[in-house]
Image (cartoon, rainbow, N blue to C red; front, top):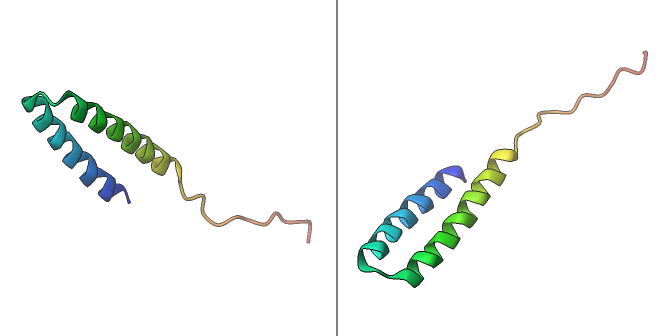
Length: 61
């Protein structure tokens, strides 16, 4: 999933640069919103850390 988010971000940054060169302010705003959402999603994905297998406490057996 992270690889795909990286690909999407790279594409959006490239599209944003193109929009900036052409002065497309509305397009820039939309791309910025999408980039904010995408980066938030990446942060959430990084937080979803595998906690491993749970251990059962020894009850004095």
